[in-house]
Image 1 (tube, rainbow, N blue to C red):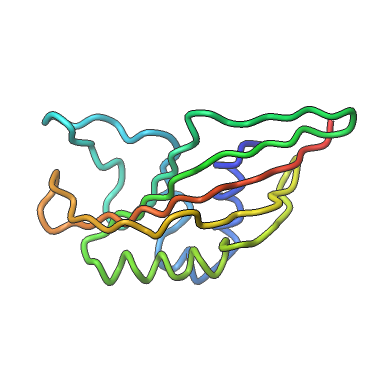
Image 2: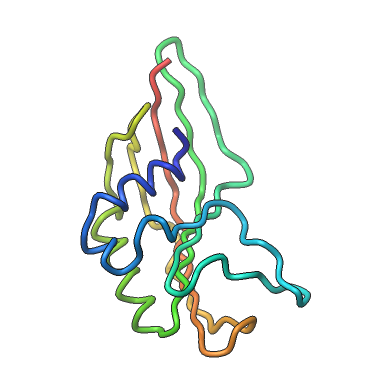
Length: 142
């Protein structure tokens, strides 16, 4: 199971998050391109979350396990800044500096590495996006 799938799995089992954004409204990977240059198509009605996996994933293989480390971006898309902040607060409660098991392995660390950036989404007036950048370390048994 990928880290993205583990995030979706853990998200889906936490009611305060699913009340704000159901796990079915989590997009994994780059958002589809929009009609305008440098724009994206929103795959779901707001609010939703997109997970951008790392471009480079560090992988170490041992005789018993596979260790990975990479930087993931969680982007929260909503019609209000307060909505984005409410979701971000619950993400921090559920994932921030946590370790957790998932099908196939363990997330050993889910650590915020940069302050969330906040922008008004120019591709759609009156929408907001908050991006959190996280270093995620995992261990999977071989």
